Length: 439
Ligand code: MEV
Image (cartoon, rainbow, N blue to C red; front, side, top):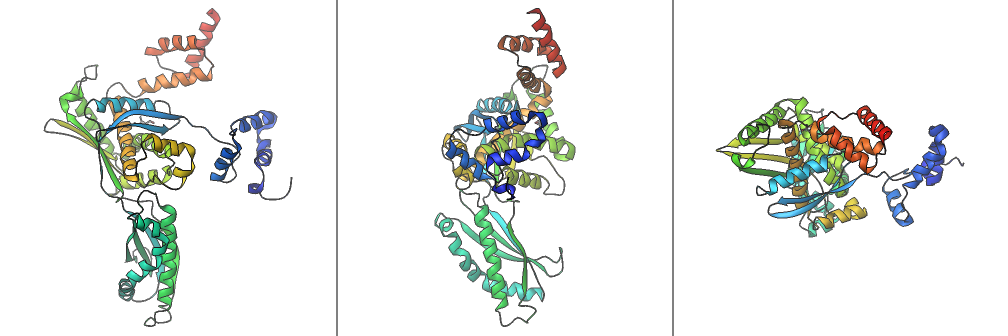
C-alpha cells in the first residue's frame, strides 16, 4: 500500500488497514463491514462524503411515534433511537394526552448568538464609543454575506461590545444577535462573525484618533454560541386532576398527581435525579433531532447549560397542581433547522420532514419539545406507579430472545413465563434450553 494518508485511501484500503484488529475473524469482519454498504453507489457516496474516513454505515432503528396531538394538529413523528422502550413509552404518553386535549406549545423566542473574542489595550470607554459610532457601518459591511437570510426576514439583528475584564485584562467580546429563520444557521453565523472580526480590526487599525498601541486589535476567535436561551420553546399539558384517571394498584388521580409533582420536585432540587430525569427528556428530543438531520450535540449541550442557568443543575420540566388542575411543562432552548445542512442532504431527514408536513424551524422546535415532554411524562408515570423495570423488561426480554435466536413459538412461551419474573440473560437462556430439550 502507498504511503499516502489514511483519508486518501479507498474504503477497501481503509478496511484493509484496520482489519488486523480482528485476528482470525478478519474475513468475517470485512464481510460484515461491507454488508452494510448501500447497494446504490451514488447514495453510498453521499453517505461517505458526510464525514471523513468512513468505512461503512451504522444502522439505527427509525420508528414512528403516531398521533401526537399538538395545538390541535396530529403528527406522526419519526424517531431514530436504539434504546428499546423509548418509542413505546412516548406512544403511550401521546395517546394518554390525546384523550385529554393534547399538547400545547409556544415559541418563546428565536434569537441566536455569536461572539467575536478579542484583546485591545487602551481606555475601554474609548473603544465602546468607537464601536457605537461605527456599529451601523460594521453591520453594513457584513450584510452581503446574509442577503438571502435578510430577504427571508432574518439576518444579523444587533451587535454589542462587551468589555470582559472579569475574564482577563484588555479582553472584549462583540456579541452578535441573529435570526436565522428556518436554518440552524451555524455556518452563516460563523462566517459573519469571522468577517465582523476582520472588519473591526481593520477599522480600528485605520482610526487616526487612536494611538499606535490602540490601533492593534487582536482577534482570539470568532464562533457562534451553542447556548441559545432566547431560542426557546415551551411544551405543556394540563387537565383537571380527576381527569388523570386511575393508575391501578390503589393509585388514583389525586395520589398520582401528588407523587408526580414530588418526583419533579426532587429532580428540580437534586442533581443526581435531575441528570437522569433530563436524560429521559433527551431520549425523546435527540431521537427526533437525529431523524430530522439536526445537530443533537448542540441541542443536548444547550439543554444541559439551560438546566443550570441559576447555578444549580435542575430538571428542565416542571409540574404543579393548582386549583384542582394538573399542569406539566417543559421550557427548552434549541437551535434546529428545516432547511440547509443534513436536513436537505440526508434522504431520510428529508423523508422525516415530509412526514411532519414540511414544518418551519419554529414548528419543528414545538414538535421536538413535545416529544421530550411526552417521554418525560411516560418515564415519571412509570416510576411513580409500576416502577420502570416492568416496561423496560418486556423490551429487554425481546432483545435477549433475538440474541438467542428464539423462534416465534419460543418467544410467546418466554413472554408468558417472564410476565411476573425478573428478566436476566441467564434466566432466559436457561428457560430456552429447558423448553428446547422438551420439544
Ligand atoms: C432511561 O433511558 C430514562 C429514565 O431513566 C428517565 C427517568 O428516570 O426519568 C427512565
